[in-house]
Image (tube, rainbow, N blue to C red; front, side, top):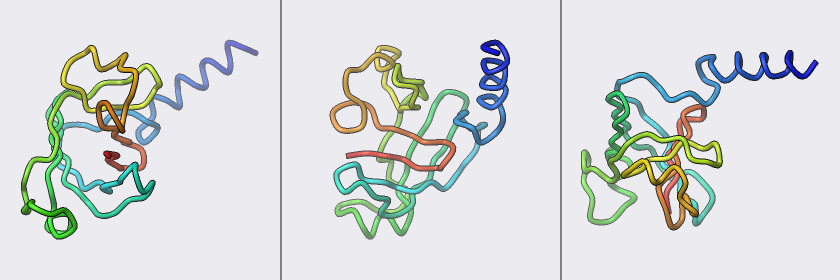
Length: 118
């Protein structure tokens, strides 16, 4: 029984939309704020292999002062944190960071298409 559950878990984790990072391309994600625990706007997410860049959309530029459409608000590498969440790190050391989101690397949720920052 234990082997069957393990097999099913592995299958679901490898299906598209079940927490896997996305293929290279350009996507629109929700821009979410950890302080308010809600999504405030949208942002553009550019993925090139393991590299990720988060840019402001026109909508987000209106919500965040001192930004304009197309500004880069985060850039790094896609890493899976020890907690199981995907993060935008600067180096592989971020995979074991004590804090993510608030004090550490930003969280990226590929399934819900959300970028979480503080």
